[in-house]
Length: 68
Image (tube, rainbow, N blue to C red; front, top):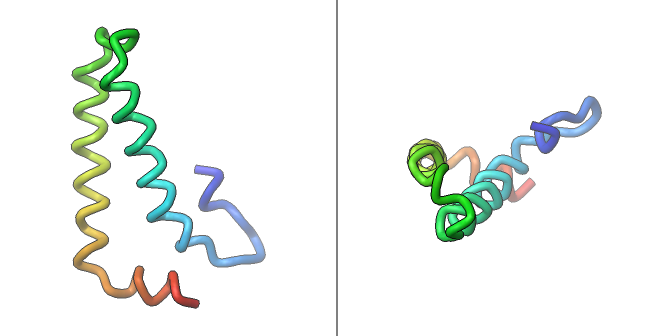
């Protein structure tokens, strides 16, 4: 959430890297035997992240914002 909070600057460009970072972290936790108990929740979270990450493919405005 702190990625998107700033009173002076537009912060939409943080969305794609933040989703990717979250996805990478959860994927590594999902593969770790230490988190076996939470595997179902991690998989559900990864599905939700993928849903929104894939929506970015359909929105060219995000690409334009990254170029600003």
